[in-house]
Each structure stands twice: as C-alpha cells, then as structure tokens.
Image (tube, rainbow, N blue to C red; front, side, top):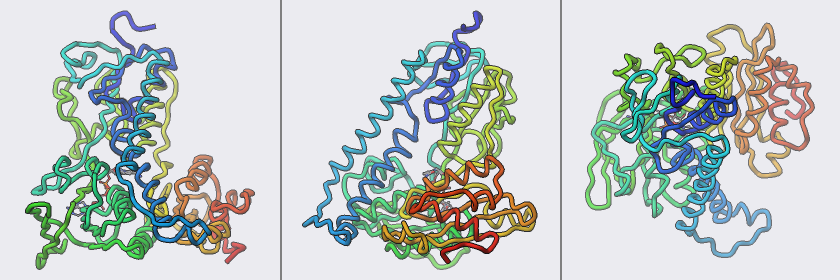
Length: 468
Ligand code: NAI
C-alpha cells in the first residue's frame, strides 16, 4: 500500500539491469513502484547496446569462423562455400534484443510497475521531475548506469562508422578492412574478436603493458599470447594522441606510453573502448546536496543508502566493477533493505567474464592481491589435459585456484577455457560458502566436462592432480 504522502513507495531512476531488477523486487515486496527511463525500450545499456547484442554478434561470428576456417570440416561437417550475410546477423541480433527488452516490459506490467517515460531530475530528495511532471516517492533509487569515457581529441561519430564506441561497433554495416581498437579491456577484446572473426584485420592499442587490467597477471599474459595467436596485432604500452579523418580512412597518431617517437597508423574504423564513467549529469544532484566523489561516483553505505535520507544508489553509478550482475544483485538488495529486510551483496565474490574465445573468467583475488595479504598456495591445471576440451579441440587455457596456505580457504579462481564463463559459477558459489580447496577437490564433478579442470586445479593446490 503506497504511503499516503507520496505517489510511490519506490521510484527507480534507470531501467538497466540494476534499476529494472530493483523495481521488480520492490513490487514483489508489495511496494508501489515506478521506474523512470528515457530510452525507447527497457533494459539499459546491457540489453540494448551492451551485453546482449554483443553476445549475438560473438555467437554468430564464432559460427562463421567455425565454418569458414575448417573447424566444422574437421568434424566432418561439409559446408561448401562459406559467405557472410552481415544484414542477417545484425537482424538476428536485433530480434534477440527486442525479445529481451520486451521481456522486461512484460515483467513491469506483470508486477504493476509504472514506466515513467523520460529523464528524471531531482527537485528535492522525494520529488523528481519526469517529462515535465513532478512525481513524489518515499524512496528514490539512482540506477543511472554509465557511459563511454571519451578520449580527448578523438571524436566518436557512430553514424559515420569511422570512429565509433561500443554502440557503433555493434552496428557496423560492413566488415572494416582494418579495425583499430583503442583500449585492450573487455569491450575492445570482445568486439575486436567479433570483427576479426568476420574478416577484419584488428590492431589493439593498449596504454598499459598487458591487456585486461584488474585481472590476474598470469591470465593477462596468457590472454595476450592467445589473441596474438588468433591474429590480433597488439600494440602494448602505447597511446593514441590524435585522429585525422580523410575520406573513408582514419589516421591515428600513436606514441609510446612512456614518451618517444610518434608513428602513424591507418584504419578503416577505430573503436574507442577506454572505459566507462558514471552517469550523473542532468540528475540535479545539486538540488539535493549530493555531490559525486572524485571519480564521479555516488558513494553509498553497505545498504546502498546515500548520505541523503530516502535516496539510494546502485550499479555502475556507485563504486565497484561496472558489471550487469553486480548491479542486479544490488538491485535486489536495495529493495529488500527499503522493505525492511536485510539485503546484502558480497562484493568480494563477484565473477567477471570476458566473452572471447576462449572465455576468460575470474572471481575473488588475483594471485598478486592474494600474495599481498599473506601466504598462499596455487594449483593450476591446463585445459590441454582436460578430456572434454581435448575432444572438442579447444585446449587453450588453464584453471588456477588460489588458496590461503594456512587455512586452505579459496581466495580466487581464474579460468581461461572455451566455457570459462559457465565454469566460474561453481567457483563463485564455493567461495560464497567459504569453501576450502579440499572441498572443491573432493566434490564429484561429472565426466567428461570442462569443469573437471576446476576440480583438478583444486587438487593441484595440494600437489595431487590426477591427469598431469
Ligand atoms: P576497461 O576498463 O575494461 O578497459 C579499458 C582499457 O583501455 C584498459 O585496458 C586501459 O588501460 C585502456 N586505456 C585507457 N586509456 C587508454 C588510452 N588513452 N589509450 C589506450 N588504452 C587506454 O573498459 P571497457 O573495455 O571500455 O569496458 C567498460 C566497462 O564495461 C568495464 O567496466 C567492463 O567491466 C564493462 N564491460 C563488461 C563486459 C563483460 O563483463 N563481459 C563486457 C563489456 C563491458
């Protein structure tokens, strides 16, 4: 039953994975709920121009590569001449996006959540204006997400398709001859993989001396080797300082990160993927006296309360990894807290996955972080010795289990494997339950599965894997 003094018990700003999940949970808990979203469809960046469309292109491009480069033929599947029909692939992507965003609309209707179409701006802590109308709520949840960090001097224009961000790179209507990716993080490697598989030459320019900052050091090194083996050119410790467009070509000026002689690199398309930043512009935070921190994020306490009474925040707009599943879990927790329950997110156990081939996934501490905290034991197992991976002819990668040397408690698990994104779930669950490496080692794993590599890596922590 809504509080008589307000239009709603809960008003969520933003309908991405954080916001829509918060709205659904709030409604499930009996709170009168609205969600403000200015995009034409629900689901935010993830469903519209992020996780979901990229997975459609990753899947389609993987099928194309399997057919075009002999993987299918090796297993006796004769395909004849393989051709790419890019409009059909793009249409399939659009259908998946439409089905999934439509699914959220259905959930809103089912849970009687009012979708307020427009951008929301605070007037005071309990009043926001959406499309010229003032709406009041006892609780407001800021779930406005993030957007692409611009690279000074290099202007993105997705319509022209020459210098694009992730949104533009998902919508290209041709395979670029040479795609230069600026930033060797998650987006650059996933979308770089898509276009490489579809026929582009791909060069990744990364400021640091290894790809995928934040991940385990050994994983980053191995990832570099694998992407090189697949034909990506990597220019590490390099920065882009300028871009000049002439006709249908872009000439980039590259410089060593540490300074030195510049070089020119010509591209048919440039993808800028150097990170994302929280969306707080135009929210009217000044009206409620809530200032973002130095990194532009809104700070909250453990319960996702901001320092303004009745105003909460979750997802990419608050500190922590910018991941849809982190935002979703925070969405559930914040609404449970608003409803007087105890909503908790264990930020120490949030898996992250790069959906390349092979996939790269991790949860918990990197080996470097774990070593800083104390003595550790590490067990490793190569996918080459895993029977299922070997049979499928996908032997690149390894699993690594990091455990506390004294207590044997698992501190981190890292996988590079064709299905690492699926495998990492068991590691996250084990860690959530406070597992020891021994617990994983003595859990019966189905044979033959890729997941047996996690069991064997756990056995290797005590030096006793079977298959190596
Ligand atoms: P990122 O932070 O993953 O990677 C950005 C990369 O650009 C870093 O390696 C950084 O060192 C490099 N860089 C920064 N400035 C540079 C410069 N001037 N020149 C060259 N390199 C430079 O950011 P990305 O890939 O843009 O992704 C943004 C966010 O979206 C991330 O937080 C990521 O977690 C999330 N995301 C997650 C996905 C997943 O979970 N599978 C997929 C796509 C995005």
